[in-house]
Amino acid sequence: MGQIDPLLSLIQGRRVYIDTNIFVYFLERNERYFNLIVPFFDMFERGASSGFTGDAVVAETLYKPYQLNDPMRVSEFKAFFSNEEFLTVLPHSTKVFELAAELSPKRGMKLIDALHFATATLAGCHFMLTNDAAFKSSQEIQVIHLQESF
Image (cartoon, one colour):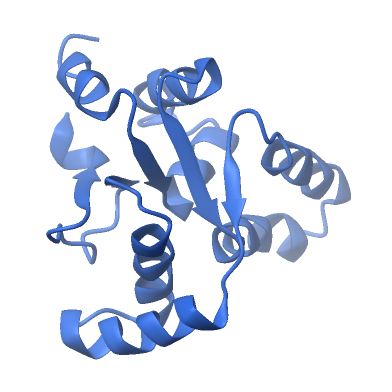
């Protein structure tokens, strides 16, 4: 776990927004990334750092189980996201959508990515954990790209 320790120290006690791909890797037990993600989720579960995400992430994560018509998996995913001690799922308010509309052209992001970034920004997140190269750090949020970190 040597390479991950500095990142865990960096985010300790901080607010971290978690992107869709991280949840997909975790819930699908992705062979390449699952073991890299577990220490982050352990940290959130212990309360050593605060994990946040948005309603849009939940919808994106549920897409495939619905597409596969897999009600058991849908139920498991919904139960996972309802664990409020581990994760705060944020709604997307009008203010979030307005900021997303502003950020999308300014930062050259797809609107859905800008929605995630706006949600993280307005929630006061210090970090964003993702594997999506479309996200770039800003003054407010340092982006941690899982693949680049290991």
